[in-house]
Amino acid sequence: LCAVDFPVWAAEVELAMTEASTAAEKIEAYVRRQLDLVGDRRHRAVAAISASELDRGAREKIRAAHGGLVG
Image (cartoon, rainbow, N blue to C red; front, side, top):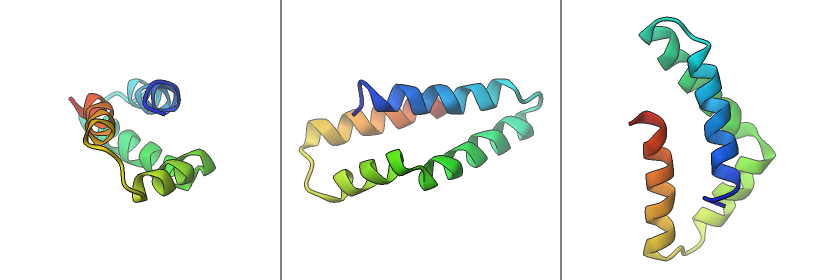
């Protein structure tokens, strides 16, 4: 998941942000694309998986992947 799906989603978010000009537009693009992904069937599968018990290593990888988008 973190190695395959997340990079695809991250690229979609990053593309939306690079197409924006101002800081405010970049924030808006980030939020809008994240909201789009929440409704994406692929993301729903991730949410279902994450609702179950994940080990600490898996949770850390997911946090790090998300953090890379805003860092």
